[in-house]
Amino acid sequence: MKLIRDPVHGYIELDDKLVSVVSDPYFQRLRYITQTGLAYLVYPGMTHSRFEHSLGAMFLASEFLRYIRRNSEVDFISEDYISLVSAVALLHDVGHMPFSHTYENALETYSKIYGKVEGYSGRKTHVELGIKLIEEEMSSALEKAFGNTFSDPVGFIKRVLRESPRNKEERLAALVISNFIDADRGDYLLRDSYHAGVEYGIYDVERLKRFLVFVDGKLAVFKKAKPIVEHFLLARMYMYQNVYFHSVVGMYNAILAQGMAKLFASGKLEPIPDVKDFLNYVDFRVLNLLKDQEPFGEGVIYRRGWKRVKVDLNEDCANQIREKVEDLTKASEGLIILHEFRDVPYKERENEAFYVYDGELHELSKVSQIARSISDIKKAVIVYHSSYESSVSPIVKEVVECLRTKA
Image (tube, rainbow, N blue to C red):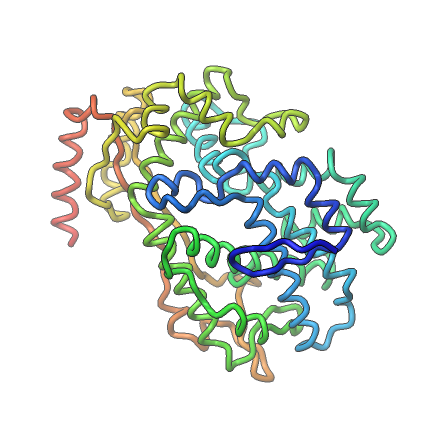
């Protein structure tokens, strides 16, 4: 067993099986992938990586499962099961590319201009790339670590990551790692708040984990913990509104996405690399290439040469000017950009909800006015190189008039 000192959770324990996962070069690569893209250009402390977030998600997954075992009538949550699910949590982001989701934005940008990218799966691209890594480069090590206890540990990991469970064991693992209230979100809210120096994402994780229960294939909390779940959802909403969707954070991530799309087009960077080249796909490689990809490098590395329209667009006004800005984006070769933000903190669909348990299961929205009132977060910002100010002026006037009439 190894101990890792973590600023968010304190001591994180790793058993020998998990040490072998963490020691794998493909997992170590995550040290060089920033968790929140270029958020550090606004919040200087947000230079933390996918590596430490993955350790934190693993820690919370194991903690959640131990309390679920105590609170639930289930017989399969052994220490070996907890170790395997912890490995899934460790690997849930192993496929992330440089600057995390901003890379996926760059793939989307490239696809719109140059055509489809083989292997691009939207916001799930990192999941599919991670599964490919696990299949082609990590499967033998995972079989060695878990094969004596489980008949198909790699298949278990793949199905959980794809959220396509075949049985109750895989279903619980998927709910603990990817749900409205889960170990992934549970860690990044606390961790990102810590590194940003804000309190928007702080919630009572100690109380939350003690009241989790697994009933009839559903993940729930006991009724007395409902306020903590509401606090969690509000924390997520506030972090998106104030940190992740900060207009200047979005501005620089938009510039970076355009710059990376240019690198793809020039052949300097393969959009989706061969698995054997994955270890070379880290943040500092992209920054090094961007130095010669002006004016994007100047904006990303030195915060120079670019501006934004200092008005956040609502959805209606973004819809009104989207086509015009997209035409300008093509004409300027990426020097005028409409960057759009969207997140859904909580939205119930068929077989997709979080539950409150008081002897019976209740969908959260049925018992929580706060859950019912939380809506999608949508806004947009116009970003442009300073040399294109005159081209943007007519759009600015239209935006101001739109916001005035729709206020």
